[in-house]
Structure formats: C-alpha cells, structure tokens
Image (tube, rainbow, N blue to C red):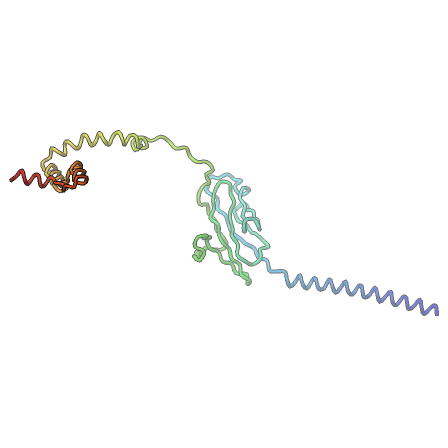
Length: 230
C-alpha cells in the first residue's frame, strides 16, 4: 500500500512538471509567432552629400549629420560623403542635412510596403505639387548660413534722399525753375488759360451774411459787373 502511494505521488509530480514545461514551450512559441508576424520589414535610406566647395576643411563630414524626421533616425557621413541609414520601416520621411555652416534642401523619401523608393522635394506650401528627384539621394548645398547681420555702410545716396535734404532742395529748385518757365510765352498762355478756366464769380462773405440776416438777396459780382458795363 505504501509503495502504491509513493508511485502515485511520483506520477503526480512528473505530470505537474511536464505540464509546466509544456506551458512554457507553448508561451515561447506563441511569442515567436507574434514577433515574426508583427515585425515589419526594414529598409535602408542611401544617398550622398556633396561638400560646399573644393577648398573646405577636411573635417566637414564629422560636422554633418543626416536626420530622418527630425532625428528619429540619424546617419553619419563616410569620407566620400555617402551615408546609409538602416532599420527604417516603410512610410514617408523627411531627410534633412544638419551642418553648422551650410544649408541643404530637405528631401522627402517615401517607401512603400513592397520596398520601392520615391524621392521628391519638400513643399510645405503646395503639398500636392510633386517634383521628383533621383534616388539614391544627391544633396548639394544651397547657401552659406549667416548668423550675424552685416553692418550697414554710409552711402551718399542715403544722405541725398533723406527727407530733410529733400525738403530743403526741392523748394530751391522750384524757385529757380518756375521763373524760367514763366518767361516762355507758350507756358504763360497755358497758365492764363488754366486761370480763366478755374476763375468763377462768388459773392463776398459779408454780402451773404447781410442778405441772410437782413432778408435781402445777395448781389453777386457778375451783377455789379453788368451794371458797370451799362
């Protein structure tokens, strides 16, 4: 009886150990399946960054970084300026070049689920406009960065076109030119014609007030002139 109890306990213990081992194996296999199913395919973004000029210092590669989506993935340059950024899943990314001395144009790289690459210029204003560029990327500098504004220099034109000088010079020019223009008979006739066109008879202000308060009708200058002619 005692032997049977001992054998029974051993069988129970063995079955518990086997069940525990099978459960561990099952969990491990399920995790492996989940990882194999959920892990996306990863790709590499390649390109080349050209130096600003031929006389640049030799350490420009060490000062340059390749940023994908603002730093989600970071790449470094080789001696010849090429770069490779690995472990990039499919999607749309903005590739930027960070250099302390020169500015580079950013490029958008799109990777579809089949692993096909397409590169185009970044246009934040007109997002629907697509201007494709070659891939692998070829990035060239646009201009040198300026951190300080150049001090303005004194020029003679700034002095001549200042408001104070213009207020002083223009009246003198008018005083010198207008008399010469009035001596010309043709311009004099034109001025007289303009004066005759703009001239019209208006009653005096005193006559208007007396007529308003006294009840008399205002007599215009035209009436006086007609009486004098008679």
